[in-house]
Length: 437
Image (tube, rainbow, N blue to C red):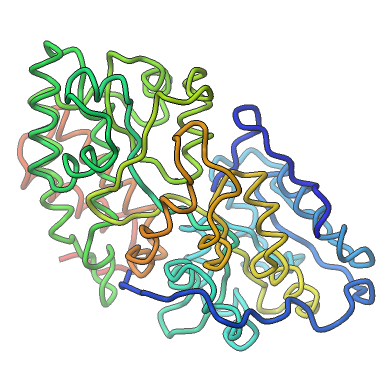
């Protein structure tokens, strides 16, 4: 058993930025061994790039507890870089002092995966392990030609979380199955919003912001933003423009910006909004960190989303030109295939390990915050998440779409057609190598 170097503490830990083709894969009957050499005999040195110094140190300490003679040097941004990416990008372009292992967020790792000669081919090395991983995580780490180049140690499946006191007061129930049904289609969401508004006298909205359902719609698309190197505006995102406008015009959302102080404060306010999008890491880091009463239980519940989605997550990749690929692979393999390591990480981060066998066993205990077994709740949601929706341009395109939506809902852009034209113009300006029609 791995020493407990990760320690859980429901509401006091620093947040980890952890926020689809149908696949019915089940846990492998035979899970391969996680190493071929004695771990104490592995001796060499690698450099790990991690955007967060504190978490990077914890990861290295955990690895050295079982690989005592391997050396891992932490490399993290020293300059002020809000995206934590520019410094690494510069190193890769120069080819000098590039770290051996990258630990990157989902949209950035997709960019590295799709860039030639950046991430090493992991297909053969991971062949015996991928069958026990959550399918969408494999899709995100695979390039357009089908080569696997990055692996995740976590899955960030999404759900809805709702305020039980508000649900009981205005909907007459806080039963998760009934709330799930009320949120199961756009039409039912709008009807639920109408009821809450009427019964609360306009004080309470369904969502704190239109950005909550936007995350759901993004997950429900049939194809990503780029298809055959052309901008693709999926019907879901066209439909969402009308859905969001209906929310705004009818005051079915509280007009708060996601991650703003008002949005955070609304989580503890029983007279503001009912539903938030909630990846599994959102239970401690969105709900409990902002609603101090949540830790006592009974205030929050989980419901199924209308569309499968994931929010955030991190992947490991190996620099294609690294001279230390054997140790780099041992490092990645340990965190993405070793069940004990993944359980320890899950305890620390209160997340979902990227291991179907561990997930199927359920959480060690029920969540006091949500009153249910978290692994068991999220388990049926992971199989339909579409990781193939993610492209290397998603951060740029999503930001452009968000800017245009805000302008439209604020009345600065006068029509839906004008909003779409503005969106296309932004993408054309920002991404010169993408065709926009």
